[in-house]
Length: 407
Image (tube, rainbow, N blue to C red; front, side, top):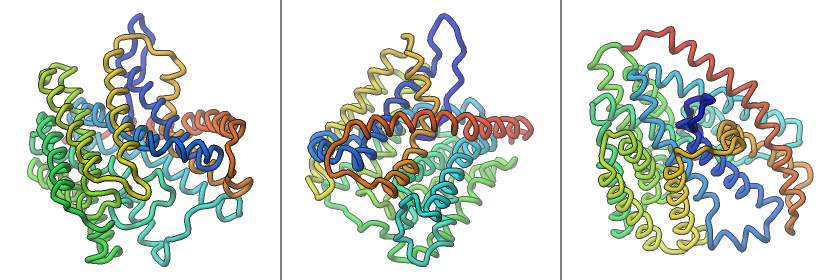
């Protein structure tokens, strides 16, 4: 997932971000396996998924890491303007490069991409520019982009809480969202996918949301305290409207995704003495209980098994807990390196899979050789995209952030 961690300095003690890098690296590998198994390990994947939803495992680990580090990044800066500059230059350069690449490869006929966009090409572009496309009734150009929409919604909520000086109440927010998720599934509260788009139209919703997002970010980055509060609240309202009313995942899961990220923030606060561990553990217990109860109550579906989801969720929380417990231990460099390039791994692997599907196609039987070969090609390629696209983009963002005066 697209979170920027502190650069590790060589010392006798492990870098404070090393365990987070390791978690991101592990999560990225699991997500890549989940997607590449469609092409190279279909038999194994069909057997595994009902018991262990690998996709949900990976993204829940990512969301916990994002929740831990993103609010800390904003609060460390103490400046909404430089926070958004950092996010833009962290996310967009690689995302733009990947989108351009996959479109070019599709144009010359060696990559397959989804084609169910209808006549909404302009709306699709606008929605993807906001990174809220998953919440705006627009198909993602490729599937992994859906998580970026929830990341962006989380950024808007974090900024909203920061501007109204309620950012220390992460545990309360996490518990509230988790309980609402449990209540919604218990009460049978369901909405059709992209319900708001179906009511007012996809085009008008994209236009309204895009304008609201731009105004929210600009105002929250302004020098005037009143404008900052207005912009923060506007962005928060936008996120709270889109996730429950226009998401494509079930209502309870959309709320739980946010709860999981704020749980990561609550753990950060306990670890840094801003809250108590008892408070953080209590928050985790409520979120986990609501998540398991919601998934169990939701039941099994065509593409969803409660057992696979619950096992994945519990293992994701356990993985994060193990990483937290080992945070003062020295982490192997290969794991931290994987974390460093994890955003590239997450965004580049669908492009490589599209090329594979467009050339050699998907295999009906398992091929461990092709699966291993895919990883052997992917990781060096991601090292290059990190070095020549991600790293320069982040450097540009840091230079620009130093030049602007905090509001």
